[in-house]
Image (tube, rainbow, N blue to C red):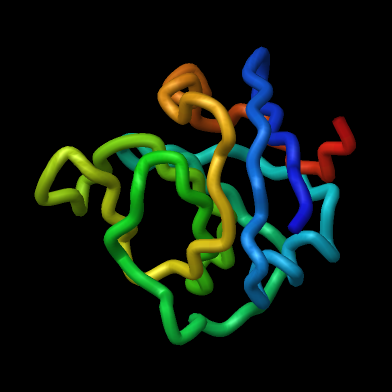
Length: 125
């Protein structure tokens, strides 16, 4: 599947989309941009996509995974514990469709602030 670039402020990070219905739907709406919200070590922003939960949707995710949260609807990037975490691993507020993962150190996203502009586009490099 496609590679994408996530840009927020001075931070640029590459990610790989999985071969899932949600990843294909997100690829079709790129580029997208929005305003960052943070929830612990999670960045999320609203995107113009309505997608149902997939059968393998889950609440427990790994640092670096990308998730689609239907209730937002939001593009989520997990890079550490969230307020719902019961360990040092990320946990979504409720189940998300995991559709990709960042290819670099996800902890670099700690520098992204609330209300910052974020943009996601296809990466052709």
